[in-house]
Amino acid sequence: MHLVFIMIGNIQSDVRMQASSHAWHCIAFMPVPVFEVHPDFQTILTSHLFHQCMDIVFASLKTVTSDGINLTDPTGFTQNCFTPLVTYIADLPKQQLVACVAKNASPITTTVLSNFGDSVPQNPQTGLYMLQQIVNLCTHTQVWNIPSFQKAAKAEKLLGVHHPFWRDWKFTDPAHFLVGEILHTCHKFFFDHVLKWSKEAASNHLLDMHFASGISHVKQMMGRDHCDIERTIIPMLDGAVLPLFVYAICSMVEFIYRAQQPIHTDSSIASTTATLQAFHATKHSILDAGA
Image (cartoon, rainbow, N blue to C red; front, side, top):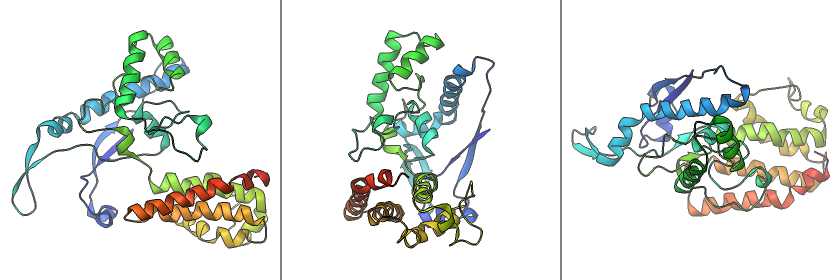
């Protein structure tokens, strides 16, 4: 089963992140079925079921978003409250499921796999744009003719879901509510890519010398392990690889640190963007090193 947790958006982050605060509430157990069909159709049917279940789970919140509801605040006053979907925290595959795009497309922009490494972001893939694509697809292809509908959907970089659960949720747009979270977008990215580049360029032996248990053989790490390596990767590489390679890795590590700021301002966003651009300007050194 897949668990769905929810919380209200006005709880401070330091309170929200404490397990003892019980700020999160489990509201649903989503089924993860295996359909007795050809394996090619498992994904599209599972995706349909996911969105149908989410439709049921959040039906009341959709109504409240439009009509409002009277709730009592901690001071005893009655407030007319609304419940838009502000943020949906998930890893990339789940974000693609929510946005109803294929695995070779971005859930929040019009970028596809061949452009994932570009330094210039593509236009946002808004909810309105996505719904119009689905309407166009359904106009020309019968939804329940699964083989032909799935083929047509893939050609448009769509998942094949014709009723996204957020379609009738007022003020709700995947381009806005789907956000990257630190664990997968930063730490897991570092482990899956940046650390592997460093291993290839500097050798496993060099990196293992700095950790008692070694890191070359580790398949999975905890958050603290990720942070320890991110803190020390630059001095470990110094002198072992070309300076431009070190600069590229340093730019990515700095981006990860800047992304974790508790509050972002226009200036902090500009600095974070500049750091990412510095990586793009020097990333050819990773290819030059054969990493």
